[in-house]
Every structure is written in C-alpha cells, then in structure tokens.
Image (cartoon, rainbow, N blue to C red; front, side, top):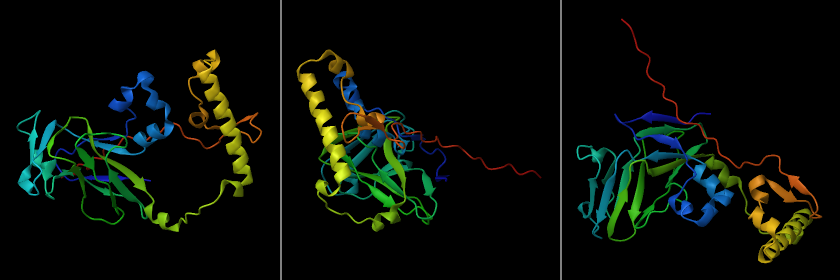
Length: 257
C-alpha cells in the first residue's frame, strides 16, 4: 500500500508522521490529557505537512482578497506566495501543500488541520479528496474567525492528511438500540461501571494504592472486566501507539549517454 506524494514545487514542505504532543496538553498538571488514549491516537493517525517558515496573517474583516495580508517573519526573501495566499476571499487562507497525492483505488485523502491542534482566531477547513483518480493537487484552507492577527511558526503543521477507504462509508447503516438488547454487552458494561464507581470512591477516600494508580487504564491497556467483574480480559487487537512510516524519497534514475 502506497500513498504517492508527487512533488509539485522546487522546495516542498516536509511531511512527517503525526506527532502526539500539543502545547495545551503539556500545560496541564502532570500532562493529564496524555492519559486520554483517543486524543493521542487521533494526534498521530495521519501525516503532518509542516510550515517551512514563520509567517503572520492579518485580516481586517473585509471580503476582498487584499483584506487578508500575509507576511513572512523569518525570511524576507522567501517566496511566500508559493506556500500560502489569499485566494478565496472572505478571510480564507489558502495553503499549497507542494504535492499531488495518489492513493490506491477506493481510497481518498482526508485533509484537515492536525487533530487537537488549537489556534485562536482561525479554523482549519476539512476536505475529502478522491486522490485515486485526481490528476491535479488540492489546497488546504483555513478561515479566520474574526478580524485580527494569527501567526504560524516554522515546524507547525498546516495540513494533516489521512488515507480513508471512503466509499465503504455508504455501506454502514446506523441502528439505534437499547443496551438491554445485547445481553452480553450489558453485562460487560455493568461490570465496568461497578469497577469505575469503586475506583472513584477509593480516590475520594484517598486510598494510597488508588492514588498511586492515578487512573483506570482499561482502555489504554486494551483490557475489560469480564461479566462478573472479577477477571480482567485482554483485548487481542488493541492499538495504543501509532507507527506511521516516514516518507521515503525516490529520486529519478540518472540516464547515461
């Protein structure tokens, strides 16, 4: 399986596997948000396209292209227009990824902002692109949420790409059910709820062993109580760490005379 990334510019931005760290997550006491495996997995399930320079965007609230002003902060000679521009008006910031992507048949690229990467004053727009046939590149767009100034830093992700088998989405039929309709699942839930309640009560009592454990790690470890609540069962196919591949460069072969 390959995600082909065809270079469309002389100096394309770097593509890296999604990184788990977020500044706002680091700011919590004991870096508490990293205990939430769904957050960390979302942060790393895809590839980041990162800014090669520092630049600043200023929007006056107008609807014209010139109402959004972009200036490079770290390299005044950098050709910023090849990376980012005001193209769609109405305070929309348009990035050129520097690549044309090609996926296997039936797969598409979901392009968005990096998950849980928060920026004040601007919002990433998400697009699903049928890259299994498209013969030209797409752009990544952000929209200013209010007049003001926003900065992007070198090394910061401006686009996050995920490969999705999107056509199979149409095959799913959402079905609303009562939990009681699945007897086995109801027993498993009740067992978990009981252990959860007991754990929280132990925290309130300041039980030393519970304090040391800090939080229940059922999901993180891929574990669940059996229906009796007495035995911890291990889930066979659980993932708690993403290991995406770093892009490799295939250079054109030199031709001799």
